[in-house]
Image 1 (cartoon, rainbow, N blue to C red):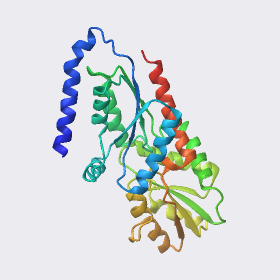
Image 2 (image 1 turned 180 degrees about the horizontal axis):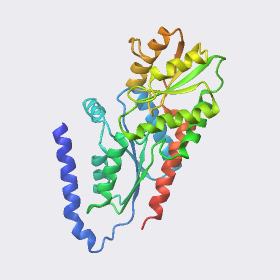
Image 3 (image 1 turned 90 degrees about the horizontal axis):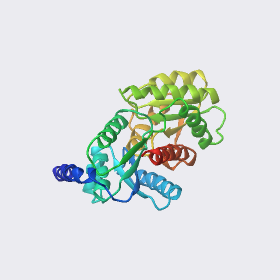
Image 4 (image 1 turned 45 degrees about the vertical axis):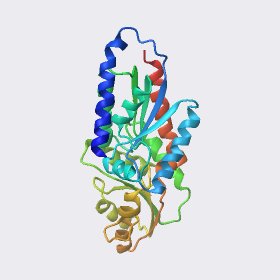
Length: 295
């Protein structure tokens, strides 16, 4: 199946390249706009629920515009393919399909939390489509949740407002994935803006910095007795259920329990959290507006 997908990508791209000379000599096709939403992906029903929630939001904001999806995780795409999910496309294949289907202008919107490795790969894909002979006349890319300095205070405020009131001595820990990519710097930057609003709000990552090891002493210093655990991800998928809320001894919940701190996992993805989804939607609006301003 993976070889077939690669073959389809190459076939579609070859068709576009062969069609390019004809397009260069008087392309009379009418403009057709589309939106491509791109997420890491999820094979879990809870994760699919969050993505469908954002799908509905995008369709309502841009009625009549074609909305499609692509997944940056090959593992997720393989799982969706095995489950016979229609079109579990990579960004490359999704863009090639759009061009083959006659769409000429595409706004791509990332549903990643930070501009990490997954987003960098997506950026490169968009750049290559923009620079090659193809059926797309224009393509733009909407930034992830945390990309610019101006995104950080808005996200911090929205994240805290989504949690409502907490009990005295109750912290909230937002769990990010973490990465060796330079985009990981957005996590400590978000931590700064959270602390400007709430001294008991923390960011901890599974594979980056800040780590839970760095957060635990701060919880003790602040006399924290309980904590909410919230995924800093578009979906509450495998990482949220296992690394954050799982019963294994190395999960966030288990490690907090070992320190005498009770925890309450909030298994809801940011894509279905209205205040955060609204920020992603604004980034999509920016991408669509940029698309309209392109010749």
